[in-house]
Length: 93
Image (tube, rainbow, N blue to C red; front, side, top):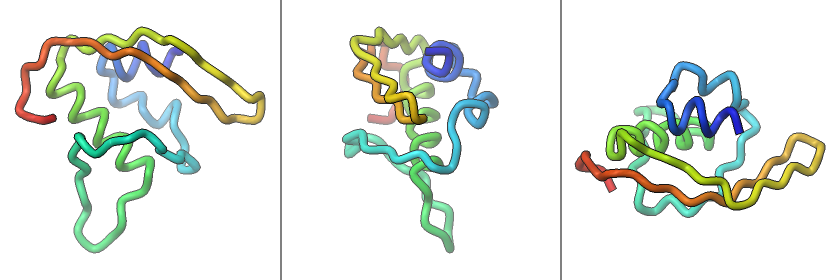
């Protein structure tokens, strides 16, 4: 929950690594989001997820998430279903 409040909603992108490690598997349908590719290497799911957050924050500066469901299996896997709202101000998406 702190990740959603701090990074997604408040835009504290410098805190991203405090919450997300290299084992992230991003299974969100992100066909609408633009992933930044680094020339010469494949972007990891963590890199792609960070890029998605940057794009969302740039496009929706007043981004707000309402968590509908959150499941923690107790072994480090967390699944979140949330409703996002905000005023579209950017060119992305």
